[in-house]
Length: 192
Image (cartoon, rainbow, N blue to C red):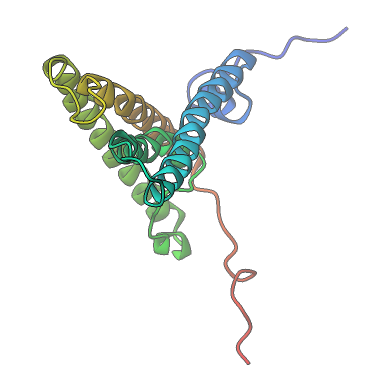
């Protein structure tokens, strides 16, 4: 006869949520990450081919396409903002990691949570600003492509929402589980 494991409550339930997330949550996170990365990869490939087309246009006997430069610039902005949330989740964004060398776990946890809260707040502010621009800039069109500028801000808003949500989740995760300890002794090169 086996006994059912009781459902954890309070902080233990939060710890379990982060260490063993439900299947639907893991699947949803992977799907959203894949969508964001697909948009980022598409933007990167477009940048490559559009810049290549611009270079080739210099040597062709006919006039070039002015929209290629404009779309390449837009793709660079989309690439930057759309994958920002993924970078927050994987802890791959640009950061000064000097706090990770501090031996006090409480200080490291506080700084990491505070930095994630700041990133989340900035993500919320940028989401609200981009939503306002989507509402107001629908009539404005880009010079070369005649694309509504609301599209430009709507695609960027995907990254802002993702960054705000993922930074909030990371802040809670660091607060509940703590900051994973990196071993910097292995990473340092020996002094000759």
